[in-house]
Every structure is written in C-alpha cells, then in structure tokens.
Length: 228
Ligand SMILES: NC(=O)c1ccc[n+]([C@@H]2O[C@H](COP(=O)([O-])OP(=O)(O)OC[C@H]3O[C@@H](n4cnc5c(N)ncnc54)[C@H](OP(=O)(O)O)[C@@H]3O)[C@@H](O)[C@H]2O)c1
Image (cartoon, rainbow, N blue to C red; front, top):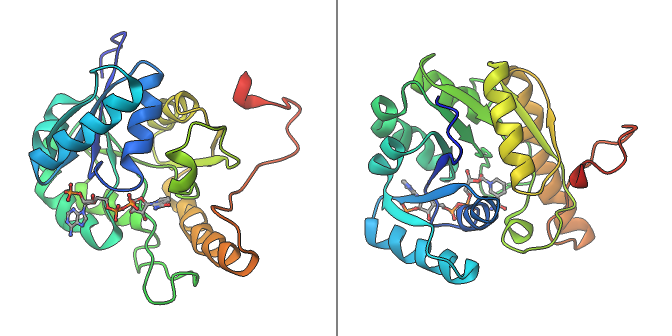
C-alpha cells in the first residue's frame, strides 16, 4: 500500500448502524471515506447524511465493488449472515488489501450466548473465504453502535487481531483516528475471545439496563491513551 498523505477507506455495507458512525469519525480525522452498498443510491443517500453532519462534502457513496477498487483499506460492516456471500462477490477486488472485519457471529434468538462458528470465529471464516492474498484484521467487535454514531469519547477499548503485524499496525492507526483506544491483541486465533465478548456485553446490557456496555484494558502506566 502506498503511503499517501490521505488514505481512502471503503466501508462495505456502510449504510447500516455501524458504518455511518465510523465514516463520520474517520472523515473528521482527515481520511477520504467511501460508503459502500449493494445499492449505489442508498450509499449516496447515507454519504449525504454523513456530509451534512460534517458540514463538508467529502464522503462518497458507491457500489461495494467500486468502493473496494477505489480504496486503500476496506472495512466490512455487514451482518454475519451476509458476510460469506458479500466476501465471495468481492474476493477478486480485495486481493492485496487490508480488510477490517467488524463482524460478530450472533445466532438468534439467543444473541447473548457465545456461539462461535466451526472455523473458530467469523473473522477466521472471512480469512478462509478470501485466502492469504488479503490481510484480514478484526476490530470494533465490542463497540456498540450507539456510541460510534455520537461525538462523545467512547468508553470501550478496541482489541485488534490479525495474522499480519503490519496490517494490525495500520488498523490500530484507524482505531486511534476514530478516537478510540486500540490494543494489539495478537493473531487471528485470538479473535474468538473478542467476538465471544460481544455476546457477553449484549447480555450485560440486558441484565443491567446499560446502553452499550464496553470493555477497557487496565494496568497501563500510560493513563490516558485516548489523548496521547
Ligand atoms: N450494531 C452494533 O452495535 C455492532 C457493534 C459491533 C460490531 N457489529 C458488527 O458490525 C457489523 C455491522 O453491524 P450493523 O449493525 O451496522 O449491521 P446492519 O445495520 O444490520 O447492516 C449493515 C449493512 O449490511 C448490508 N446488508 C444487510 N443484509 C445484507 C445481505 N443479506 N447481504 C449483503 N449486505 C447486507 C446492508 O447494506 P446495503 O443494503 O446498503 O447493501 C446494511 O445496511 C455486523 O457484522 C455486526 O455484528 C455491530
């Protein structure tokens, strides 16, 4: 990937709950953001809404395929049920890129029960679908969309897992740009815990009547990484 000053990020399925919040935060941080969708009109409409919030005309909408072609780093924000088919359709376009996967493999009706797929995690399934030509990195699984779409500091850290260290570094920079604290959580095998944590957080939300419970890593001598 070229080290240009402004990187282009494509948020695939960026028209839902998670995508617009990330688009807003990354645009504010100076990235060029494309909202991807199966339907270009829908992508344009959501891009327009984010632009209105930003008071600038910077976010673009495109079909998912075009968005991948135009980006440096892609971010997948589709539901688990849609992940495999979406990635199969984009596999050729994604080769050579970093793909950030946000997927939590929830199994309705009991979404507060940890039920991971046979491959170990949804993110591992994504890597298996795409092959070694794509650097798949998991991030944002534990951050509730209610926080992402607001402008406030988010009371949840982000665990970043992937098999390529350089790709994890790139994604940690994106996490910081979104004004979140990220931690290198090691290889893809570890993402099972991260994805499973999301179900635990959903259960805690329900039992304690919390809107968007999160996690935080403690014990670090750098007390406030969000402002460092
Ligand atoms: N919601 C949260 O708080 C949260 C938190 C952390 C992680 N996550 C994970 O982040 C991902 C996105 O979550 P979300 O809540 O933003 O999802 P969502 O709003 O339900 O869906 C996001 C987008 O995915 C596309 N999509 C939906 N069904 C599809 C299908 N069958 N095939 C292809 N594309 C489809 C749609 O885009 P188009 O119609 O425009 O193509 C939709 O706008 C999920 O994997 C979720 O597990 C969610």
